[in-house]
Image (cartoon, rainbow, N blue to C red; front, side, top):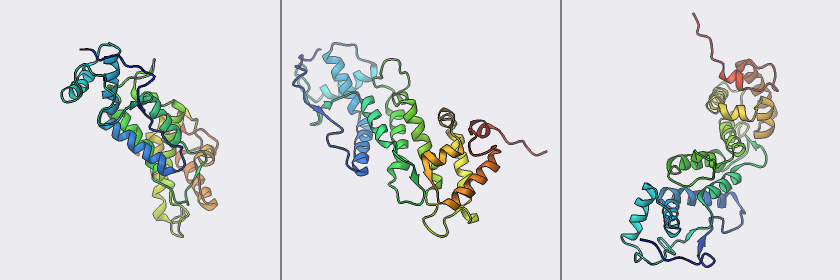
Length: 256
């Protein structure tokens, strides 16, 4: 069965970025919409429809998606204009994902003592998890094998470190929330663990302590000094300019 050919100049499309980005709320709204669409199979179904229109062989997962819409949808030979009253996307899913990821990159370092939307500490994790969970059966750009690789390396690694510094959020927001307070020292241990878990991003960005503090997060002056001193001591860094990859990889010697 083949669908009736369509005049592609008259096909309605849906734009995830239909409005100008004017606030963090709108970026989050677009992210929510994208994640929901991936979960519901919106992109997969439309890719199956387009493949059928172009008389291409459907993959197994595309066949399953396509069979669901023709079983209760349009007549077999009618062109499919809308599915659940929504038009097809105006661009491939991976370009939309890339555009969202670009919006998630902060243009300047974040302040530990400011009030921040969860978008900047959780947005990338949500987008990444969504791509890992639902991207496998979707189309990818030429040369890209893994769905997560549709996000350029520079952006992906930037976002990983951007979220890694979440352990320092809150320092300076109150008189108790500072690294002079022994109860807040856990933050240093946790950010070291977070950086170890993202070692490929540390390596890609050639991340040093100095770069972490000048590109990603701003601490109150006193906390910054304590943080530098503790990180240098715990990792065995020469100074704040030493690239941290090797020291983060280094395993502690077991005590005899």
